Image (cartoon, rainbow over all chains, first blue to last red; front, top):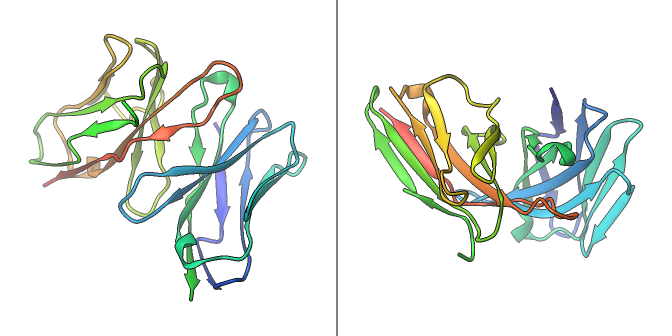
Length: 113
Length: 115
């Protein structure tokens, strides 16, 4: 089955700096890669996603890049703000096969004001 | 409804007891998923429904776990003879699966504590 590894497990940055979180996946058939943000005690919320026919996607301060050959994808947050502090999860799925997601272990991002 | 609704939000039960967790998906979402999230970890897949049928239950850890969705809307996750290791947040999600829409909407979860 699919295995998703996520690094780092914790990341501390100064407000205004950039943050990068990286994930690798094992199943070359995976074709859908969402990122979720989870604040303490809250539900995971989809913040951005990318499909395997695209190499990069951007939405304001966040962007995701995908390297299918290397089987890795990354989340980039620019101009970080204290409200970006949360746990971020990457995930992978074969969207044509029911879209069951395999999640990474999460990254706790702390943005210091 | 406007979002995925899960009840109860918290459940404390004694070891060996039976529990039911309920999920009410977004109206019109045909796909429904159950995940389990242990402290400090990412959600782990349990079971997926497409309509009324369980399309994939490969994530259920053992036969103490069972889920139903009899009318293709509300789903119930049932756990028999609960064990302390079942303590976790149980998350439900729903999505549209037609066209190019794959994004999930998660509910707030049920925090199950087995004492």
